[in-house]
Length: 250
Ligand SMILES: [Zn+2]
Image (cartoon, rainbow, N blue to C red; front, side, top):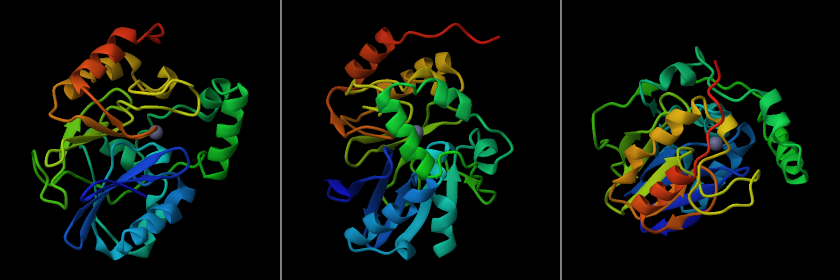
């Protein structure tokens, strides 16, 4: 796990990231990788001198298996409240499933690099449907009273209730999959959208960038790809300008 600020850490699962915020002995975990990444989350927490029991809450950017898959095993180690945006809760609870199908993913991953990625995510439990019936809506508006004081920023499109987390004390944005900086399916690095077939509503995913554009943050901790530092407003503008959308499905 990489220390990206005094009390902010970026961890890596199977080509997916998670974030740990620290305040004293207490931690907040943002996302938790694929089912097989639970051990990487625990290892990351131990690497910084903590234990799973120090986690006060888990925040979910969205309910895709690469972000919540590790949680059932982690919560088996000790119950921790799990929070997501109220618009995302149907996905988190399992009553909705706004995720690209296995067929979609395979169809878009025919290149050699895609095949390697597919094999890796299959091993990591990528075909599982993970639901978390105990997840709750955020306990308050604005800054959450949790270690690190993250502020949820609804940025729907990838899923209806996808949420990034602004870390105002350090000027960082845990952007989840609303804005990433790389993915095994593309050679491109730097701020970008995921391939549009991953998004529940690709047009809304582009529109949703407007919620991120003017945040006071100059560092992205994305759901996929490397940490990125720069002018967020300009980066978002470039991504929006370059976004090409497939025709809307009817
Ligand atoms: Zn993802």
